Image 1: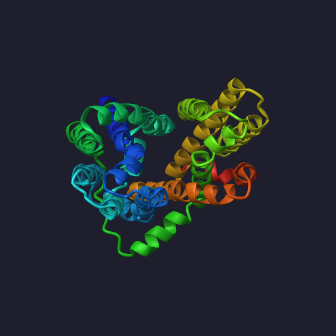
Image 2: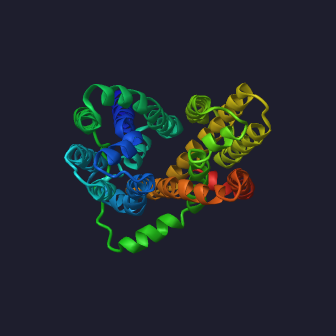
Image 3: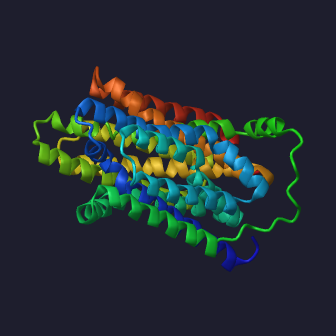
Length: 398
């Protein structure tokens, strides 16, 4: 997009919409087990089962369908596809307020997964709208918004649930998505291409060409690993902290602080990525960020006090934030312009797969030994470092 003001307006629109949408999502989801209990499910194990299934089904389905929605976005426009997704969230979240059985929640979350995917599309929109030398900054800003929203959502949700109850809180969440929809509708403009979009004669061949783009599969793998590692802490961190004999209240408070430190570090890393990419190639940035994340984890495991653990997760989060923004940027650079949203659909699908699998595998590994989760994380990060350093072509601009 040649007009400087236009791409900045687009950047503002997708960043604000991402922040509002991700804040709205975490407004009610942390309280889902309590909502299921209100529906008449009393057994703790059954509540945990329905909550886990309901939380996992959306990213699992979205991961599979993200490339499909990306292809439609390449053909009919990104803005239309994001508006479709946000409108579906308004409807589904409103319907959540009327459920009477636990399986109703699961079914609605499955429907939500079918029509979701706006997170990946907003990354594609930011990358496409920005000048090439500002792509990393554009992606980093949207990723920062997608991290900060979930950090604030549970706090706001707690206040809302206290004032109006959990059931009515779903209407508040729907209003957040409606606001995000209004921002995209009013402010975002699809970039004008010099040539009309060709109708692909062989869709399967186009996807194959995309996956054969230099380093694209490696960027998908890096994004999957980094997301997997980032989300593996949620099921085990409170248990790890409790091993030192801390009380329940202290564990809850410290877990929240440590999660916030990791999120703050990741947000800082998202922003620092552009500066690093101007000074070296993406392969080295990904390797360096992944290495820093591994060093932070090792520091965390050897830390002897709470402050050191917080600093360690700040370092680990920053390294992961740098690496994942660099991976998205490198992937975006090798994607043909006509397949931009499709490419980001695959990249986002890899992230969602990590998001869906990480808590499950972390829970299984932790049944034997909590340290097994950290060991797997360290091995995966080391693998990314080694592979990216051996494949510098992954960072080559297109």
